[in-house]
Length: 323
Length: 288
Image 1 (tube, each protein chain N blue to C red):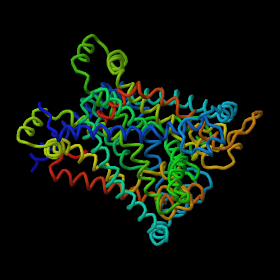
Image 2 (cartoon, rainbow over the protein chains, first blue to last red):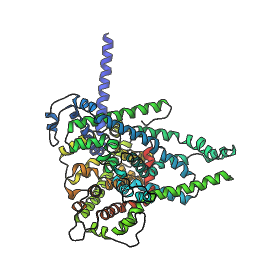
Image 3 (spheres, chains in turn blue, orange):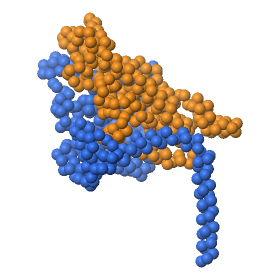
Image 4 (cartoon, chains in turn purple, yellow):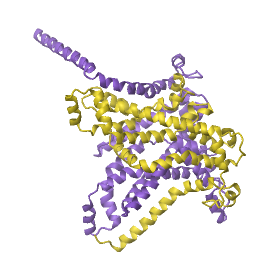
């Protein structure tokens, strides 16, 4: 027994020595790297983790008109009251419905669009033609959502070319931007327009690494173009499609504030109001800071859970996952 | 390889489809550029016409004589230049230690950084933080909160990791410390990747408008994209883009001219930096 204690003591001593030694080298050998990390570390702690600390006002009744640490500490705890208010409000079902419908539409239409375009672009054998098409399709990615929405409003406006064209067929002018019937379609179309070219980049790179001999072998076996695409191209890019899919699932709760805010109006709240637009109007404009922080936290937690879940699922399925 | 008849049909249809894609991509931009140079009467009579029969510059004359638009333009240029410089500097400073495999704090810091890609405090908490720090209505609200983007940080770190260790080791034998290696070896070897993230940051700064909306009530400090957003969303265009002496063209002409003026710099630059852009997207898609 005594022997054991002695040994444990010696081990402790040795450990303390190495621990102290390690702490010392941590500061002496790497001080220059620490110095380089410092500004970035401060940035992340203040501007990224600072707001996360601020999330505690979701459980408080924040009263300050302007921000302040004092106002955060000074306000009373209310527990989950804001969450209950939100989940039982009439807003909740509407926001949830719009968010999910838009996400499913994006998943079904915006997600496959760059895959299809990349596969078809890969089949363009004239080099300068392929290059030109690529350059042109990247272009909208460099425009802001303000500009894209501005262009759209002009094109589908009552005095725009679309309504003029419809007028030739005897159709009365349609207020597309204010129509609950067409607004979601406009969101999807404008998103494809802006991002499809950008999206093709990763897929094109994956396709270009496919061995040409595979295509030749398939051709000898009598496979037509469609069969070559289905049995050679698609399997070759399935891993990258899986990764892109995980990223897309992480966006199910909505990352389209800029797009929706610049395009929507009160007339289409019913089909287009999502979490972030609601948080902006109620929280920032309406100064309901605590309540909307609760809404925001609710949204972020679901997003985080979805990312972790899909990452785990894809790992189970044999893909290497995201992290 | 012999091309079968079916394949010939496929290639033909594919080429036609690509033409169609290009048309759809270009049409909105060409349409607005054309109509921004069109007189009001012609625009109303020929909504489908792409190019004007008669050039009318009144929209541009007004926009270029408007002091508020010039002001926003200046703020945006300053923001883009100063912001991008700060971004690149601080991103590189953090990316270098994170690329060193023997740096003990590397793992903790990487987790700290990547977590912010998946979870954030959200709009309201950010808004309150900016108020608390007193950054609202200052120029620094455009720079500091966006100092390091985790995505660009990972891109740069991955680039740094590709630099062969042997280069550094020989420098270390010559007595170079980390800072010397960083400035004399790593940075000069990574100019292409620095250009890549600088491009991403610059486009971000030029196109971002919501921080003006959230944090800046002083109209003289709005960025051009937010001013444009106000011009498009409001009917009283002349209040937002005040010009002293010139006659007032219709609101639509001002809007279109402003769309073109705020977009042209990016459209002129992007074809030349495309190469870096593609490279950055690819390196960024490798997992962190």
